[in-house]
Image 1 (cartoon, rainbow, N blue to C red):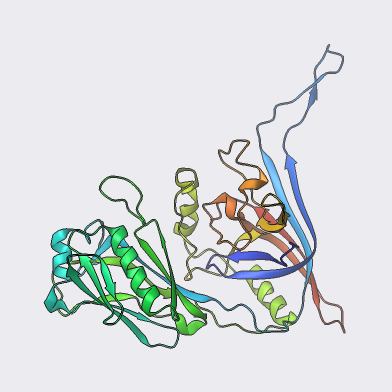
Image 2 (cartoon, helix red, strand yellow):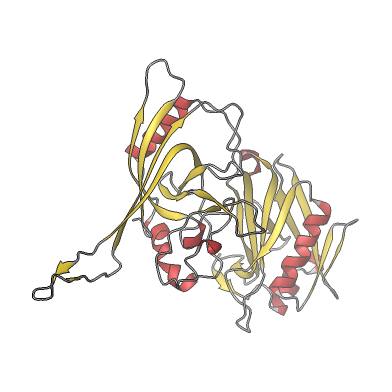
Length: 370
């Protein structure tokens, strides 16, 4: 549909994408107001528009055989140095990890502290971590040195430097705002996102983690999420794809009300970091990504996703210039990343002797799906 060949994609609760070959798209909106004639006014018509609308997206398309293996994904993990977990009771707290006393315990010379990550081949990749007079990295010894008064953002930056220097062939890294804030109340780039360089389930593991020789009550470690979401590419026939969609339409539900309830934070969280879809979610379809060609950037066609600007948007925020790039990540609490909702119906059709299955589907936009 878009100039780059970006397909229409359905988004599952677990973050998996279902690509669709569409031949026709209809995006219909019905505004619910009814003009009424006023007596003794020459039949002037008056109406009250309360901005109550019904939206429907209709798509016709087909399922065909894959010519090559597709659908591979890289496993992703995170370390947030601004949110800690107690080494014993595993409770989440803010800012405890970077307390001077805690850093002294975690990186004490007798602790032999290491950051351990498994790559997609299952090999341990290790950074040694010590306390010192500066935030630095020694590539020959793979030692990350951290000051006793280092901030979460500084630690994230130096650990990223170590991974980029020694293990760039295994992982790619980026830094984003973490869950908490520093004592001054300003957002901090404390969260390190680590992505395997290779697709496949081999990248999923119970790492990263920080190992210590001695488990000390009261010591806090940074909050981590394991490598997850890795998927091995595969080939599917048209029938495989038809069966997968038939199964989802006939039996799928949200994994928890918590996942749906998270979307209710949309208004207060606009413009702030959002939580990604969980790889542990269900196969329930929660959104759709429909690309269009935009020429607002340098006059060249750029694929962006249609979005549904429900909520408190002003007229400038609803224009196409605010649409996100088609390759971006979908979020249920960021209306600009795509269209949230659910599948109302799908008719799958097959003519004997044909190599494809055709379908008609109906998607209903909805900001919260329970």
